[in-house]
Length: 449
Ligand SMILES: [Zn+2]
Image (tube, rainbow, N blue to C red; front, top):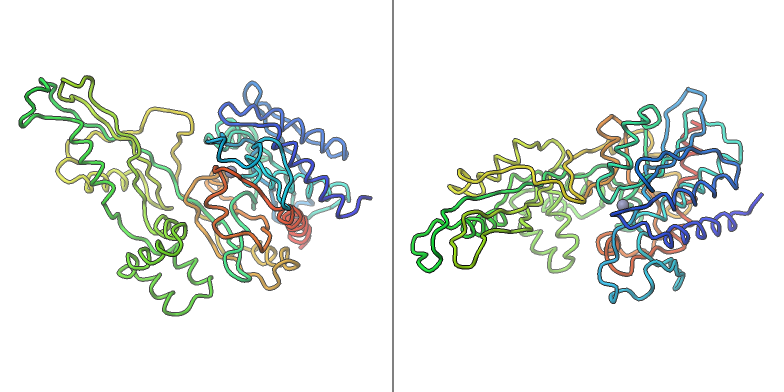
């Protein structure tokens, strides 16, 4: 039997290999990392299945069958693909070197989310090797393609392995981050994506005589400004859920839970902690960000056509009708002539609904227990994340799905906002050790109840 330290060392070695495999999506080529995990499990006599979803792209599943008498739990879906490195000169180390320095493993994907892949694989292998006999099933699900919407990963598995993917509880990225003493963020849901293309028509005439011309570029520019300045309906439910769990003073709680004070709170927060301000803003409403403007054909022709591509993120229970209604309202009289449609498919494009799981489900007290060695009497602060993760696919089918891992208490709060997809992404060795312990303890206790 290996010692605990050896298990942690094996996990770190696995994580280093996953970083070095460089599964940048697109194109992903996740087969490399899936094969590394397959070998890692086979070396430990843990059976698993590799499922090919496209050339060089696959997913891996494994299961410890329960005795059909309790809730089932999935480690994952956890993704092995990563995003490009961006500006290489901003990195202090080779982003794919798998370098360990200053008590951290550095590299693209370490935080999002290869450390979770490695710790879940190791926790699953440990439980299997011990002959763990859970009441409900324990499943392991490692996927491709999360960073481009999950078509060849989780979405593919939902279609091709519906029974395996049907599970009561699932654990993946974006949770377990210390936000205040003894308080950890628990990802309970996420906003949806409802990207739109907003197009305008004009009348192409000679650009040398533009007086009172009907110019589509001007319309798009004005529309972009109006969309940017618009305040959609405010919903404080998700902020309140956080504020109540944060142990804040009554005054701060009051300020955070009344819409008239919200603009003041946002302004104040932006001065002290811009990341927190952006998060609170995103949690309180549908956000509208016109990010591409395109129009016209020639400098000497008044533009006959122009469009805006708008990144729109919706809260749970906001639908397409809601989105279109508010886009038109935001643009005023121009909203009447604007053509609003789904943008053409492009890498990374998807639409999704906002989803949320129960912040007080039966697994939450077990999470508190599983982290108690590092955080005695921990409380979880429910969070709706502004971006999208694969967990939405499972929530849509009724799974209670959470962002859960266990970060080192030294982790700065803005880590999750700046490092994933940014330069110098890294994860502390302690976080690897703690997350491994948390997954192992949680599965053991929860599935044995
Ligand atoms: Zn991720």
